[in-house]
Image (cartoon, rainbow, N blue to C red; front, side):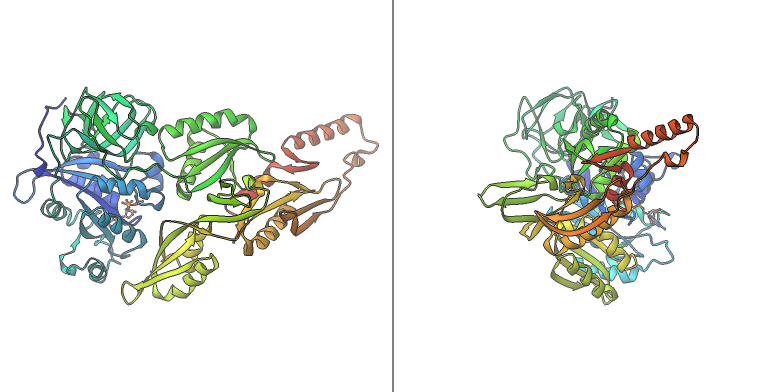
Length: 609
Ligand SMILES: Nc1nc2c(ncn2[C@@H]2O[C@H](COP(=O)(O)OP(=O)(O)OP(=O)(O)O)[C@@H](O)[C@H]2O)c(=O)[nH]1
């Protein structure tokens, strides 16, 4: 164990790197590890800080990581830098904002071949809200397509700084990285805090490790936390034995204590990240602080979907898997639900679509499950005629009686794209019930559009449509912006008069008809003919809005075997029975399992457009 070294807060610099996705944060972080000698060049592997396999494969950072870097500085006094790598995707904005709150400064990284994108701005605004000192940096200057002069002008326009003062670096070649570290020391203020006050540390990340339990990352604001003391979580008052206190450099290294401004980790033997939540304040049981550090909020799911095992016998395994996953993911919520069509499963709440995809992929990959997920939906607030109010996270919970009002969540969207696509973007946003709030030119050729839009219109394929209409040049970011009153209805799909809950959807009144037509047509293709006629209908309440019919067949399997031997007949009957096992019964109608999967698959499910 290292000595109880005292780090003078004046010699500490806490910073994070913020950027649009793929602008090169992780690569720059790798170079910083190398330049500061924390990781030797030959041990270096790409994206050293992205530890989860899935992060490395997708090349994105899901969880913030932090690392301590020694850096001499121009004056050679020897500084301690804490770098906090933040996730770049909109789903994880809350984590980004907590990471920012743990820092005094931010490196704003902009790809010199792409310029400012939607998340660059979103992250910049978050950094400004947290009063951080922002160091703008142009990255990837080694690229032949880099246009540092042009994009320096764009950044200068937004930050109101001198374009020539913007550093130019390459995370790939390492050019400019040392100068950047020097500038961090020079420009970012040292942390300030009251060393004699009761200890307060903010949790900015919390991960589950199968060997060690929950590892909690904290930034000490006031006082000092020492190992073997009992700590207390201020949001819920729970107390825990401190088993280990340490810093990451880049491997976990135990220390005796952490003081003002220091960033490190603590291990308490807690087995569930929900007991050690991002944003919470840690204090000491013996001398607790009176008030927590502000800004804590519970993670709030924005998107819901049902997850069902394809093989019903895997239901208990799915439950175990969700239990385990939740240990590592405080934002994942779930509760059991049953569907007449799909059997037993779980209704799950996610922060957004990417979060949903990641959870599903981990369940399938790490727990070897095969799953069906129902079309995602947002949370609706429904007020019925008798004045009662409910939050609907599942179309099948839509109230039967008269509905007075329906409110749906809305988001503020920022889209940045070359000006030539302005018309196409406006058309798309309008077709998704967007309301133009404002428009700004970042330069002569690039425009920023701001829309207010229902979240439900974005969570399906909005980003894909945006990309295809702008040949991949547009970037999108959105943030919660409350809710709005909307004309929404529930559309049911009926097979022979029976509602199939898995296909019910909630859509705007004007789009309900299109959904009904598409879904009924699709099911007519997917469901095989039966011995009787099967009507497929789409309905709003008792009103039918679309209908298709599967004509009857009279399938006499034995006809072919007329005069044949009895064993052949028996074999045919057996085969038919086998086939039936993979069928689900909806009333009298046999629906192949595959039809459900095909109709619900997010690739080609008819989406309420
Ligand atoms: N030529 C060049 N390529 C770079 C540079 N920095 C990053 N890249 C490449 O850009 C891509 C994205 O880099 P990452 O470091 O994964 O980007 P990121 O911002 O961490 O991405 P997220 O974690 O997904 O937000 C990778 O293919 C990198 O190899 C650079 O300085 N020059």
